Length: 563
RNA sequence: GUCCCCGUAGCUCAGUUGGAUAGAGCGACUGCCUCCUAAGCAGUAGGUCGCAGGUUCGAUUCCUGCCGGGGACGCCA
Image (cartoon, rainbow, N blue to C red):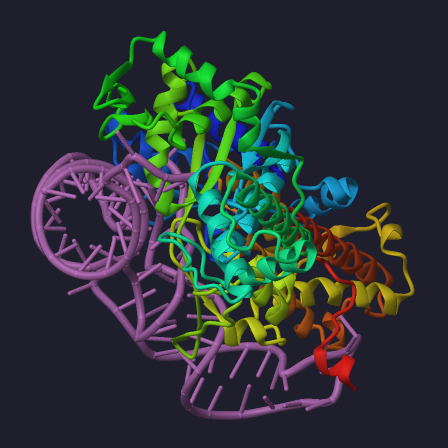
């Protein structure tokens, strides 16, 4: 639009009043009666100029050269707002950019091609993925999408904690079930895993190895249990994730940090910083020097490292691989790790605040206000796979993304199962599909719909103006959502825009109001409305693409399939 | 006790460089309608923005304190 022109006009007016170098910020008022663009410069300058804001606003308004800058009208309102109205041609000109950019509309190069790693999910291979992992996956993937769209070179990374005490508990749990399989009385150890899947793994071991390990609890037996369990569970998690349409560029194994000696060398490096001390037989890092609540143990008195040490080694590795920006998506219950990992890498010379964390709260599934738990395969929790099977991938992803990460998420199962456009996901998808169906009805390939020779100024109804304004906000929105690490802003935008689209579409229902239909008789108007429809389709599709959600050309309901 | 997050309409939630009459969906209520395929559409009601101070021309937004909910405070991850 003509934001730049208005800024210049205001600055020119201000110069006439003896005020130089003012940053004029324009925003779109919520209420369309306040014009298309507005500024609060008069309010901001009141103090500096020692004059009432209203008087300043009026003087600016009177000095604005509306003709030179092609401004339709300017007015003063409230305590001193300056409101500008644009011609419908100026508003509608935004469509040209949308259609020209197509798949790339909304992209920017803010990241300048710099590398950034987004680590998420990073579940231990000790059981099926649960809803917390699902939310983390959906948020992390959307964040990666946002960064990609804003010009970063993004790597999606998964850190497998395949070493350490948790895995030992898993191996012991499988061992116990294996013994039980052969009728021996063995109990799952304290802190072990109770889920049904442990028994399934034990049964498969019994099938493969027979009773070879009955009553035997040595290195080899536990090693086989461990290896089989980890391999099985990793394969299962990988399948869940790929069905959830999440794909990682790098799978990083914690065990590799032990194998190549980097855990040990990290201790040595940290000792070299002078921030390390020995106490009670353990090795500590003085993380309080970097703002942590208390100092942390790196090497336990039994000589084994805590998880903290490989974590530091891992993040040093990220940096050394060229990722000078890193985002870790984690459950809020892990927030204690933030300060200590940051302290650890800072001690080794990395800048404060590396890596950056996005913490998310937990998920609760409800139907009619009551908590719903699906199955018991995993023991006490609902798995991601179960929820996906129940409501579908698009709905699951969207619901996980539509709330800001640091708020608790109530997953409304009744709403998720609703296939009308009460369901926010379907609302957006319907709006997209409706545009596609118009193109089909018109007998046009959507790529053939353009703005060449089309007079867009005929898009002059209030609904059309507001819709176009919403569409042209998309690039700013994407940039902002990426900066704020806030995928939910994309959801909000899509829902709001889809609402505007749907009412515009319905208002043009040919049986009721043929003059407002896209496919009107008048060639000029039809061409312009087709271009608008095409713009809508592009923006909705691009928004959904960032989130990793399908933009269908046609909606298929369950009963259509059944019938 | 210390630290982090949250507290906005009956419910679920938006609202970031502080701006006009605080928004959306669900639910409720009132009308319409069978359509450019969509169990749909249009509208109405509903608010001391947790409480109390402070900063400001202006605070849901920033600061302080308090109350309420969740989480973390391990030589677990």
